[in-house]
Every structure is written in structure tokens, then in C-alpha cells.
Length: 285
Ligand code: CAA
Image (cartoon, rainbow, N blue to C red; front, side):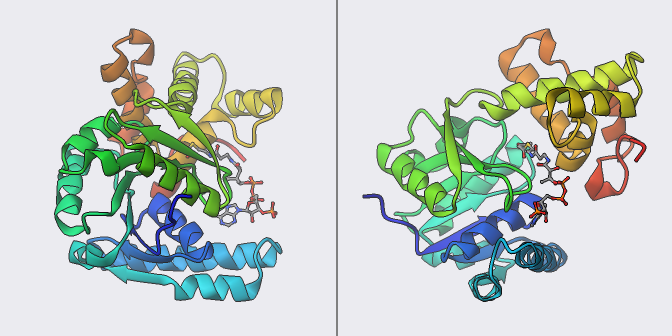
């Protein structure tokens, strides 16, 4: 049977990192949430507290469990604090240069037995593994947003990921109460290979006047029974993240059908990144 980590670190205290730290702490595992910015860590802790409070109010989690989860969370601004962890989940922004540099640093500070997982939504896990001296202990552990609510974790095996690393990560996902799908290490994996071209196409439809933002989203929400239309979902995920993933699909798969929509690019250029920036695609209501 695979051994569960006793101590886990999450690197990056953004929306995803905070959500991952929350579910790990709630599952009984101690978590260090690491970010260079004190401000990001404070914001993440406040978000985790309010998310847990919401889950308590809805009766999904009891108050004692929520309090205990908060007691298992530690924050740090230094990677040096990773010296005693068994498992690391990297959740920094979706930029390959940044992740490659970080994986080399994680390899230098984490104990030799530690597994280094990436929450990347599209970047090659094999290349991340090759930036370390432990490629057999590197894999993709891709959570969905909002992490405390969504039921899936996508597992991605790199070319050199070992069976032990894979099994330990499957066991961790089960402990977190998540179901899994297993993807090959190809651009966008399963979820974003299918989801992002749909979001990109919604921007093309808006750009070409096929419908208003409201009509496009209402059409897809009610017509296909999904909780959010594609433009609202892009706002929720972050338009910069959507663009980065489309760029990875386009450069990695080559086909012009993955070309990022100019309107999506323009929104990102304007800083209209969606919910986190206070403005994205204007969708009435
Ligand atoms: N923490 C705790 N609880 C939360 C929460 C959070 N962060 N976010 C939502 N909830 C809870 C609410 O309290 C509510 O609980 P009840 O059902 O018990 O009442 C429930 O979730 C639903 O929330 P709301 O009533 O506020 O609003 P909603 O019904 O519109 O649901 C949503 C919000 C869960 C986000 C829903 O709109 C949804 O599922 N949207 C689609 C999300 C999605 O597709 N995510 C995947 C994105 S792709 C991705 O993440 C991969 C990638 O790489 C880009």
C-alpha cells in the first residue's frame, strides 16, 4: 500500500495554491504554504478561513474539523523550510520558465525521498522532471478550481515518472476525497485539451458577433446544462491562464485550430483578467 505524506508543502499562495492547501489540511495532513509575498500568504489564509466558514455554514464540514484544518496550516516565505517535507505541490503561475527554475530549486532543498508534483494545467511534466535530479519522483497533480468543491484531480505521468510516485499520488488524491483521471503528458492533458478550445471559440463567437456575451453564456449554460457559460468560466479561471494554456496547445500541437483568439489576447493586454482583476468580459447579470 502506498504511504501517505505526513508533511506536504504547497508552493504559490494564489487561488489554486490556497485551495490545495485547504483540502490537504482538511484531510489531516500538515501543510506549509510557501510564497515570496507576505501579502499573498495573508490573502490566502483569509480566503481559506472564509471558504471553511462557508463549508461549515452549508453543513459540509463541522466546525471542529475546520478549526483543526486551520491548525495544520503553516506559512513561510522561504523555500529552505522544505527541508522536512515528504511531498511538494507546485502551484505558481502557468509559465514554463518560472516552473523550470522552481523545480531545480525544489530539487535542491527538498529531502531526497520527497515527491515533487506540479499543478500545471498544460506544461510538459517530463520537461519539469528533467529540470531535477529526481525525474522518477516528478508528476502532474492538476486540481480544478474551486479546489474545495470540484471532485477531480488529473494525474499526469511524465516519461520518467515511477510507478511508486504515481501510486503514492493516487493514494493522496483519494485521501483528499478526489476522484482522478489519468492523462498522458501531452499539451493541456485531458481537461484543458477539451475545455480551452471551447472557451477560445466562445471569444471568437463574441468577436465575430455570433451572439452577445450574455447570449453565448446563456445558450451554453442552459443548452448544455453546465453551471457557468464559457465566458463566465474564463473570467473565473483567469483570462491570462486561458491564454497561456491556448499558447501551449498551439505551440505544442501545431494545428491552427488552437490559435488563441485575438479578443482573448486583447483582454489580457488590457489587464482585464477576469474575477481576480475585477474586470473581464462584461456579462450582464
Ligand atoms: N469554498 C467553499 N465553498 C464554495 C466555494 C469555495 N471556494 N465556492 C463555492 N462553494 C460552495 C457554495 O457555498 C455552495 O455550496 P452549497 O451547494 O452547499 O450551497 C456551492 O459551492 C455552490 O456555490 P454557489 O451557490 O456560490 O454558486 P454556484 O452554484 O454558482 O457554484 C461554482 C459556484 C461551484 C463555482 C459553480 O459555478 C461551478 O461549478 N462552476 C464551474 C467550475 C468549473 O468548471 N471549474 C473547473 C475550471 S477548469 C480548471 O480549474 C482547470 C484549469 O486548469 C483551468
